[in-house]
Image (cartoon, rainbow, N blue to C red; front, side, top):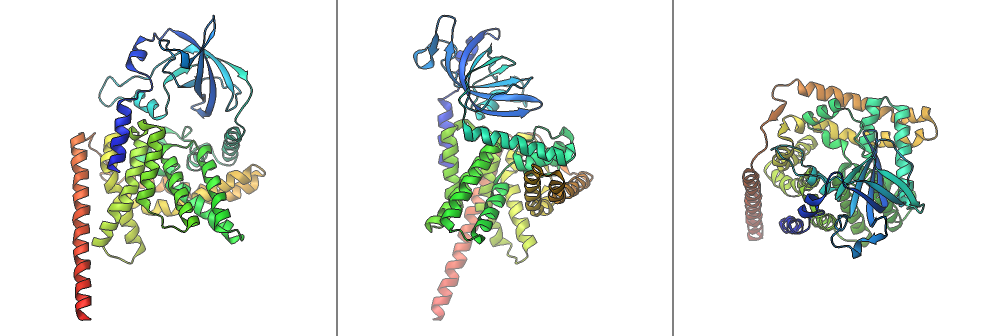
Length: 454
């Protein structure tokens, strides 16, 4: 895993989407004309976001292929993100003509300021445009991508037709991966209570849905090969529909590997699957390693795979609540430095609140998703199916409100220095090595005692 992160860092050092020289030479008033292919669309804060893969530059004299251009401003421009205040009707896969002003994301000028350049690098976006001229050139479109995009919009409309706006926004985030409509008050409440992770499509959601589908299809009489392939296809489609964020992509890859291991009769190894997921993600986009989603997602799994077994060796218990608390604590211990680095504060009681929140997530996900699907046909039955999710969300809000009233519910300690983070993880590694060696010595001693008794 260490080699994986070093490799990702090395790739990013020599590969900038838009070089400083190019970005610095572009005037904000410079208007460009381009041709591009739409590869993704989403609604955010009542704006339509269109992701375009640039094909070539258009000039008054001719259309110039990027492959033949060395000095023009689009020679290093691959992906473009367009913000439209007035949504227009386009389909994923359309070839469009674009005319507008290029805006390049910049580095922060003050400590703690939002790093726009780093953020858009993780999205593989080189430049932005706002309310530009956009015309359809070729109507060809990606049928399946467009199907998933329309399905997501229909499910979103179904949720809002059943639930009130506040709960609909939360359910939309939990089952469709869209957090844009969640109010700042609710987002802050979940963050300060330590349960904001449930608002992102992650391993929890993917595993719940995937394993449930496997169980249902297996009971219907299908072989593991057929059901496994079907479920893998459904999970990949679900990941694409919900935006395929870094954490979602990691979860999808690891789930596919676990199912594939079952199909070929091999043992699934969590660390090997995590490493392969990291390699695939960083090959596609090396800048992902700088995002909070990537680091928190991977370090959480490392906490479960490495730190949790060590703590279970120290605290041996047959009680489920104790074992759950140890696993939750492992994740908390593994991610504390990163949480402080990105958010400057930690929710002190989050580890305990998650003991109640996570077990109920299965009901929330299935109730919310089934209610949205049923609501496409009948709102009344959709309301009945979504009822459990509605009341659990009320319970979540009550628990979060109570937690916030406790003393020192949130510790705001600021952003730690990088050397402190490194020192913390070195301590974790030494702790794991020490516990492992101690356990192995005890095991060897027990074996010698056993064989000498024979």
